[in-house]
Image (cartoon, rainbow, N blue to C red; front, top):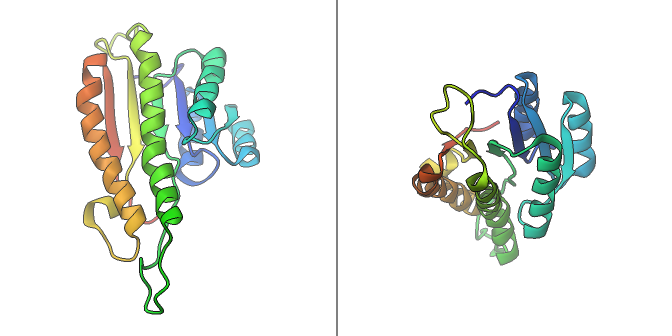
Length: 197
């Protein structure tokens, strides 16, 4: 699928890899909607690259639906989704002192990294299911492409970051499962697994 002229959604676009991805897509001619809970950061980056800034928590169903509606109203149906929203977590589950990570900490890491990725994918896929396949000559009926941010941590399981490892391993499995499921809709699903950034 060609990037130029195509509507794209980038989650976690207020910093790091998400910001870099949004800038790259915009430079390649995509119509980019940048989503992030950090409204001011994402607004600054969107202004720099000519994108649409949308404050959005990817774990919030209503907020995500509203953001996708705003993006579609401005750019048309998004055919590119890049999931970069995530939070890192490090430190032992149980320290020598006996201090433990809390259940709330574990849930937050899974919620943003894994649940947020699934939430964005299901909502964009539901909209794409109703859209006509791309009219690009080289698309062969493709409706869209999703790229998820996993991590090398989700593949080699380093100690000292169990919630993050579990979340990113989940992103890997989720990507494979939805690649198979969404193939019948003409949506390609893939993941990248970066190391330390």
